[in-house]
Every structure is written in C-alpha cells, then in structure tokens.
Length: 310
Length: 267
View 1 (cartoon, each protein chain N blue to C red):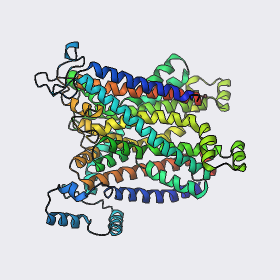
View 2: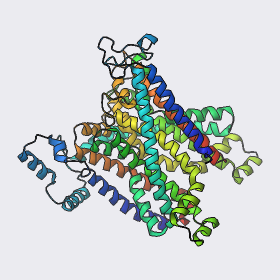
View 3: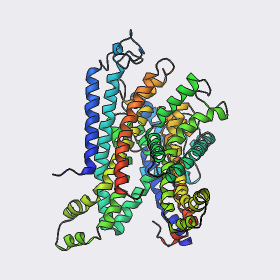
View 4: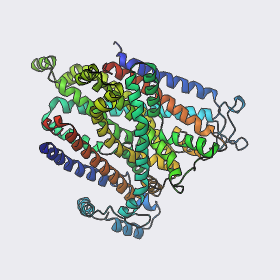
C-alpha cells in the first residue's frame, strides 16, 4: 500500500512540473508580439519598454522561467495586467462562489444519478432501463451553455420562479446554475452506477445471498452497492475537477461571480496573467483530485496494492 | 476495399448531416444580408421558416452554415488528432520501456487540464479563427487516442502473429499499420465518434465565449450567445442553434454508444 502511494506521489511531481512549464510557455506561444497584443500596434517605444520591464519580458527566457517558479513556490501567481492586483488574491476571492456552485452541482448529480442507475440496472434490457439510458445520453449530449438559457427561459422568464442570473438571492439563485452544471455529470454517473452495479450483481457472493433469501432491497443497497461504489467514487473525484472547467461556461451563462467569470473577463481584457494563473490553478486542483482518487481507491480496494504505480 | 462495419454508420451519418445542412441552407435566404426592417421576426414560412435575427438576417441559412462549420471542425479535429494520437500511442505501446515512459508522462501533463480548459487557454492566446480553434481542440484531443492506441498496441505486440512478422523481418511501419492497427481499430473508431461529438460541443463552447469564429460568420455557439440577449422577445434565436447542435451531437453519441455495446457485450 505505502509503496503504491509513494510511487504515485513520485509520479505526481514530474507531472506538476510539466503542467507548470506548459502554462508558463503559454504566454510565450502567443504568435507575434505579446506587447503588441497588450498595447496595440501604435504603442510608443517607451511604453513598450516599460511594460516589457514590468512583465520581465526583457530578460532571457530561462531567467523568466526560474523567476516564475520562484514566485510560484511562494504561492504568487503574478500580477493582473488589468487591475494590478495579485492573481492569487483574485482567484481566492472568487473561489467560494465557484466551490459553492460545484458542490451544489455535485449534490444534484448524485441525487439524480444514483436512483437512476440502480433503477436501470434492476431492469436490465427492459424499457425502464432503455428510457433511463436514453435520458442519460440526452443529458450527456446537452451542452450546458444551451441547457442554461433553456432553464432561464422556462423557470425565470415564463414562470418567474427563479432569478435570471447573479448570486444575490442565496439558494434560489443557485438552483438553475447547479442543475445546468450537474446534468452532464449526472448523465455520466448514472451510466457508471448502472454498469458497476450490473457487474457486481453477477458475482458469486450475490448469487449466494440471493439463494439464502436476502430480500431485493438489502441485496442491492447493502450487498452489491458497497462494491459497486468503488469505481463510482473514483470518478466522482475526477469529475470534481472537470466541474471547475464546466463552471467556466455555466458561470458565463448565469453571470455567476466565480472563477469562470474571472477568467472570461480576463480573456476579454487580454489579461494573460490572470488566464495563466486560473488555468494553472484549475489544473492543480484537478491533479490533486486525481491523486486523491488513486490513493483512496488503494485504501478501499486492497487488491490495488499489488499493482505497480500505473 | 471492404468497409469496416464500425466505420459505415459513422460515415453515413456525417454524410447525411452535410447533405441535410447543405439542402436546408439552399432553401434559406441570404445569411449575411442585413435587413433592419425585419428584425427578430418569429419563425414562419414567410419569414424564411426560422425567422430573422437581431440584424434581420435569415436564421435558417445562418444556422445551417454554423452546423456545417461545426461538422467540419469536429471532423478535422478527429482526423488530425486521431491520426497523430494513434501513431504516438502505437509507438509507445509497441516499443514500451523508456519510450513508453516518456510519452505517457507527456500525456499525463495534457490530461491534467480537465475538459476544454487547454483549448480555452490556447484559443484565447492564439486569437480567434477556425484554424486556431481546430488546433486548440487537437491539442486537447490527441491524448485520448494515444492512450487507447497504446493500450491496444501493448497487448497486441505480444501476440504470436506479431512476433511472427517481427521474426520474418518486416519493417516497423508494416507491423504497426498492417498488423496491429487493424486489430486495434474498433475501439479507436468508437473513440473517434465520441471525440467528434466532444469537439463539436467544444467548438460551440469556444464560440459561445467569443473565442471561435468571428462575426459576421455564423457559428452555433456565437448564435447562442447573441440569441440569449433577445431571449424574452425572440426565443427561437436560442432554441434553434441549441437544437441543431444537440441533434448532431446526440446522433454521434447514439452511434458511438451502440458500437461500444457491441465491443463490450457484457453490459
């Protein structure tokens, strides 16, 4: 077990370094002149020089990179070109709103997908299974930047039940964004719960339990679910990272004041420092989630410890 | 040459989608002509079937141009990222050892960016435009193919028939493309179908954020974004592009899903 975790941790380090390197070179991969992109074609030479010095672009690239790494280790993601404020602060200010949205979406997805998956698995290849799986395919194919406007149109404009956008009405304003963000995940999870449960239901110990006369409810929720949950839990962790990216589009639809709108505003203002910081932050959260998922999996499934750190 | 049955439905669907969008575009009006006397008209046969947008342009033909663009982007991404990723993956799995190790660590780095994050970052930096969107999506899409092809090559390279061709002195290209690839094709085709659906949603997402095709050229994502502003008075501007995108994506996902069920008969 500890060997597996150690292996996995050792693998984590070069990946983190690679991600940091890639994100750093983002800004240097801009075709043409980043200064021109920021200041426009007609900028004065003095302005260009001043900005280059401020961004450190006048130094050799390796020096820029080591400076970047040095700052990064102190939790410094740079300074916003637009507002002049530290990127780390900007991200931390917006994080609670995005976290709230992501957890609400996760909650919605779990509450919807587990009963759906179990329901479908118990009636394999019958019409309830087919309807549920078709519904999941539909949810999977529904872009969240379309589902969002549809929900707004129906629940906000026509029925007038829920706010159109923003985060000022507490729980009420959270409902539509959470459904929008959580639907795709519910679609993935419900299929996974179904597949995982079907696989476990074929196991010998389930047949034994059934032969002993255990009732259906206990069989599914107590005997089968425990083992069926293993892959589901892993995917939950992985999806949590994906939720952060999905939140970018969802936040754009609902003007939700989180990390996503921060990044979109930065994109429009060509504030590359904030974009770079945001991308790195989301990637790091996702990587950490992946690591936790693997370690958790090793804890709940003892068979893993014999595997090499793949 | 005999058509791979996995490929047939996919090709038929894409060809049909191109044909239908082309046909509907031809019955629509001018997609670019601004008509300030007929703004936001509701759908009806007199208003060019799907009505007009905020500049009085014909929605039906704009929609179909956007749909075709979405298909072209999806197909380009799958072809470019599919070929590149598959080759990288075959090499990785076939050689194993440090080659495999290095390639897999590189894919780890790309996999650390969830969803369309990498595409958003690159499209933002490279500026708008179809080519940049395709490049950004390829950058994100090749990894899935590489991982899958690697797993296939890893198991297939130990098969007796592959060893036989090694011993008889066949070249690397011949072994990879003629012996391993055909037997690894089925799951890769399924991946390609889902990847195309994913690329189409991603393209629309980038356009929705203003990072894709630029006005006045229509794209489904940009139409959704613009349409959302006029939702209370002209709901068709939001309904139409979303419905078309979902229909195309759903079609691909259904085909991919059926094929996957055939591959994995257990479930």
